[in-house]
Amino acid sequence: MATHSFKLPDIGEGIAEAEIVAWHVAIGDMIEEDDPLCDLMTDKATVEMTAPVSGRVVEIAGAVGDQIAIGSVLAVFEVAGAPSSPLPAREGLGVGGERSELPTVVPAAPVEPPAAPSAPSFEVNHAPHGSGIAGGNPDLNEPNPSLAGRGAKVLASPAVRARAKNLGIDLAQVKSAGDHVRHADLDAFLTYNNAYRSAATTRPDEQVKVIGLRRRIAENMAAAKRAIPHFTYVDEIDVTKLEALRTDLNATRGDRPKLTMLPLLIVAICRAIPDFPMINARYDDEAGIVTRHGAVHLGMATQTDAGLMVPVIRDAQERNIWQLAAEIVRLAEAARSGKAKSEELSGSTLTLTSLGPLGGIATTPVINRPEVAIIGPNKVVERPVFRDGVVVAAKLMNLSISCDHRVVDGWDAASFVQAIKRLIETPALLFVD
Image (cartoon, rainbow, N blue to C red):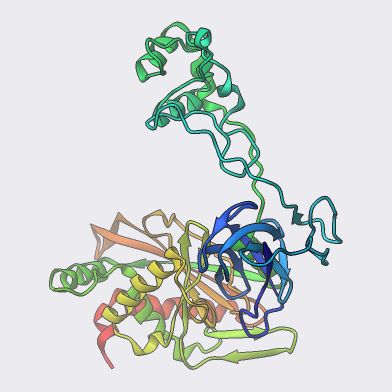
């Protein structure tokens, strides 16, 4: 058999290394050409690497969380061909029992396939393929006393196993009427063992390695708080008329996307920005230069399964509310599905962050460096207010803005929010040139 060494190619201009955030293969796996190999994260985006050849994986360089230099060997495959000599030792990649200079190499080893479960509809405590560790809670691997005479493992459906784990119950102690533990068996066990109920509030400690997007977020937030003197201003806005307008627009939207508060708020922000150019800016503190941008490239903080991402609405000032609504939906879906392009995740000049119904009373958002401001709308609540001496119901929303005090003064931030407030409380002004 011959071997093929796959070196990490150049995956972007100016990128010298990438972080491994996921392996899709293990040593010993058979893989086809173009099958997913691993996911790599750069400063700009996550890139999926695919296998360049078909064969068996014999070496991989680096564990999840490690940085891999461009041009270094990422993986070695055993492919069909002429017999090859033993693989030479290379920097950063170990072979057999030899350790190379980098400790992150996983040596080649045969992989035993997992044993087939006794029945397809129940979980048995086998180790995952290639993991080398027992699956699930080790306590649940002990034989069930009711089945010990047959030397069987504890059998239970995934739902029963999850419920037992949440209750802190060792399934080996549960007597079952048949060949597997059912919910009724758990109920009977709880009836005679009330002490187990208190274990439901206890969960084991968990260590989570900070890698990938989570590490990028941690580094960026730490740099922002370390370098930027933040201040936050909050004001209350009456959105009663705006909400009524939004309801009317949604009632006649046809096949256009449903309007949330955000497109209308973005229109207000873009209309106010020309009078407050210091808000829509980026600060290069090393060069000592503030760039005040004419166009509003608005970052939309978006929560994904991997963490917070900030896709960018380009030239937000040129779009109407329906175009903004459609772009918000498109970018959010791209970010959450991992399909957002690198250019859609960079270049923002101002960021908007919203928790929607979870928005709370007030927020103090962290600036998306090197920007100098970030805006945070909070949740809309209905409260009684006085109008002309009469108590009426009104829909109110607090609007927060955090600014870089090196560039933006408190007066500027307050005046900017007041300008947005006037536009929102008189929503007809949003559509007047």
